[in-house]
Image (cartoon, rainbow, N blue to C red; front, side, top):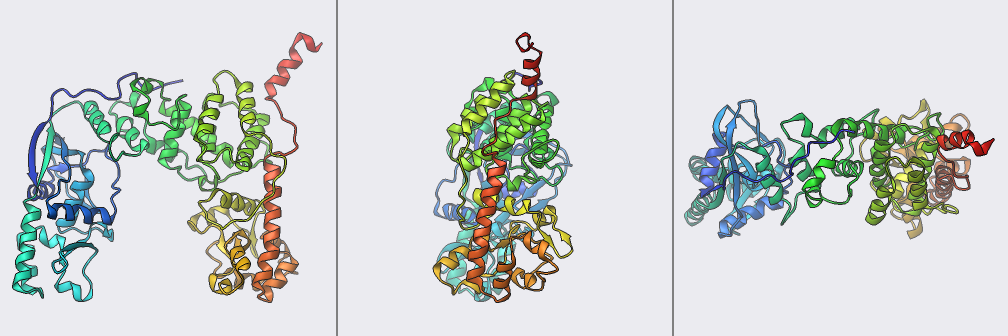
Length: 560
């Protein structure tokens, strides 16, 4: 199978960078003139409003804010420069400075001090309170408007002059504001400029800088090193791999999970950072085409219902996977064994669900993830399957307990999948899971709102926070308890039963007996989840071997 080219991850620089200092005033001028740009290997902006406020507090107090590192190269006119959440026009520029280190700081300075439209992104909106002598996040409001100075006003002498003419500050306070402006604009920041034609050496410096101190996420370093290579042979773009997974509504897995899958497919430790694995690791990385094929096979397996002809795990969307580790390990399996037969797919489904029941697939179980990844060995199909199944063991039974429902919680996702397997319906027919996913986080919505149960006994309030009080109906239905009350048990029995609302539950609902409804339906949900997991995990079923092993045995001389 193809792999990326064999070359060093961290290439050396041809010559050391030039050292100098920049005032904030000069940084602003260069940004406005489009002489400072952001290269495509930079990570997304991650600073919060509090980080921006702290930066300006440090500047005013004269604290060092670290150095900046730039790369000098010509920039074509079609490259865009985003300052905060504002777009800045970028004409062709010879000798532009591309930010290698210091993107968050440079952006914060320019976004807050320049007069820009951030389209509702208030992280970059800062004001100065001269009375308390502190920076605050957000626009001045009410009585603050004449006393708190927006930082975009401090970024320009003329803007500040106009603001001071209409402000409510006395002369002493106005003088203080002018002094603050000068201290900010004259603040000097150490800087380095690299003048090189070798982008690989540059990206090596970038990755090394961000592998120490406050480190970038592993996927960000990976994307910087390999996701932006100019030559196709060595390119492995995590974003494209994410997008390739979005088949039939599956959604895009988070980039850190895609990176783990890439490392697992490559036979590397999925819990490690690429730069920590050594420079030779790049030669073992899976190629982008093969990675895409394996990821799409993984998605197809996850989405395929367990009882279908092809046999799969029956998880339609990434957001429903209880433990993402399963996605990573399955990617390695389908990379090494793309032609997996139906019996083996059934065993893989049991492996996935047994790992959920026993907790082996928990995110915290990093050592077990490494062990399972190493157990999937190239050219050892039967042995790999046996080792995977041995790693999770077969649970003897499932005794489910309802816990507070949170859509990102693994147990809640199991409950959601249980409710989904019942094929929930409304009075017009089956509810589409895609319609539920399009509603965002509220896939399983509350039947009774908090005002209906907040005055109940503690046990009932606890039950109201669980799946006993959740149903799968899309956003067309508002106020689920009121919605269900309009149904008739005689005519809508099948639809009600698809939400685990039997006749007794329905009678409690009609009488508005919230406590009894939650107790009765909660018992039904617990029973349904236990049965769902027992079937999915194949408890009590014999272990099946791959089809080829039976055929091989039948063809052997000993079988005659």
